[in-house]
Image (cartoon, rainbow, N blue to C red):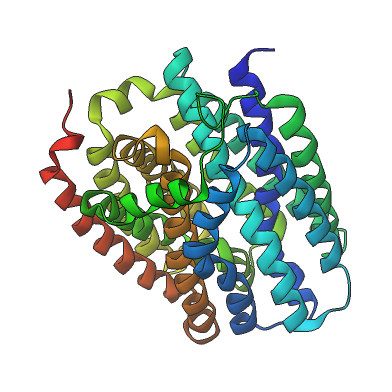
Length: 387
């Protein structure tokens, strides 16, 4: 089996879980009596802490000789954490266990991106292909759980997540290549790993890039946490929610698989600008609760608001970092986009959803506007100019 396929299957093993946790864990929490504010808080805590937890986990991951070892360990720990969620822990207990499970599970993707980007550059394949396979698995999770919930209990959301964690742990060992963390074959000292992290945090170009990308990416927070509930209030059934999410991710997959020549020609700075502008249009339209027929073309904008900005962020971060701090660079990027900025946005989204419903999307539009303004500053960074 070729490496791009094996990488794609591993992304699939992870994203078949995130395809359920993103839209449907709020349904599980609501089933257990939590209101919008509490759901927003419990989802936001690990996101906000990722600015610390993600770099620390990256430094920890680089302590192993092989990059896949950390992913195996994380997969096992995630499975155990989701199993613990089944206990009647209450709000405080679920918040603690969810914090651990989410912190570890969300770190697995950027650690995998380091492997995929390095191999794509070395072996000459399109990184979008394996990443797109993962997105296809995300759709399976979306649509599959949406169909299950029309007849089954929300408790099945947690069953799915336990299985996804276990599959990820096994897949990390079976599918990922035994690539060394350091080419020379030995592990670096803890002080050296933290030194590489510090270099990134002191680099203004790098921090401008990750904050601009993070603002646009984290503006998906209201959509991820409350689109299912917002559409349900409009009378749209949960089975249709899965289809709508599937439309968005299908557009993402098509973009990743077939737009590689365009991406290379346009460049990451222009991609980030285009994605940010499309995101402003998408969230502003959703704030006015458009009819079902209009949701389908709006969902295709996911190819720009998410896929374009995501791939732009990976390329910008890779260009502004070195092999010595590549893991830390991608996890810092992920920590901002899916971490502290998303955490703050998700927490505020819960408060907004309880008070104004879908109009909370307008805050996401404002975040994207700030991200676009930050992206404009990257045109002055000479390191990002085409060679």
